[in-house]
Amino acid sequence: MTLDSLLLSKDPELLRVIRPTLEKLSIDVEICHEARAGADILISDKFDAVIVDCDDLNGGLAVLQGLRSTPSNKNSVAFAILNGKRTTTQEAFGMGANFVLQKPISALNASRCFNAALNFMVKERRRYFRQPVKMLVKVVFDGKSLNATSTNVSEGGIALMLREALPKGAAPHVNFTLPGTNIHMEVEAEVAWADVKGLAGLRFHNVPKSSQEQLEKWLDEQLEQEFPGAKERLAAAESEAAR
Image (cartoon, rainbow, N blue to C red):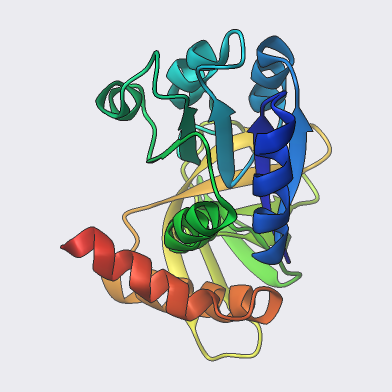
């Protein structure tokens, strides 16, 4: 598994330095040369990192300012690239940047910055990480008990296939055992979305602390298999956030 980034810039020297730096860290790079097109991409696609050439790309600052209002990328790790003439570092942080780089950017500075940010990218990936998994799930609501099959599970919810449609807004209880474990989950949920074919997405509520910790540990193990080193980076990010 690789992380995903969007780089908004038309500066060839910036692209020459940053692209290989990201690729060495197993971060895929999508490059966009126009701010308007980049804003459209951020509405539809999810990225672990968003890098904006704020001062030298027309409209770049507006993209950075609007990033936190995009549903898909409001929690993405944001990097502001400045030229030292227009936007100050303090202003960039105030607009939502997590990291700031000043031009001219050397390969060493870029490597140090993105290495420091990698832990936070992995932590964000874990937050929305959905593990594909097929398992039996018991759904209880309105006095009825239904058997469903999961398609994926995250730390905050689960996607299901049922033989009948669930009403949106329903508040069922779901019971399931995580594959390959004896970890049994019994949690309250809310139907976040559902279609007439029986597909539904449930959002967990009031999960007991011990159950939440077990679920997150299991997800970390699945993430580790796809992204070796993820556990250590998650621990580092959580330690940094606690300071």
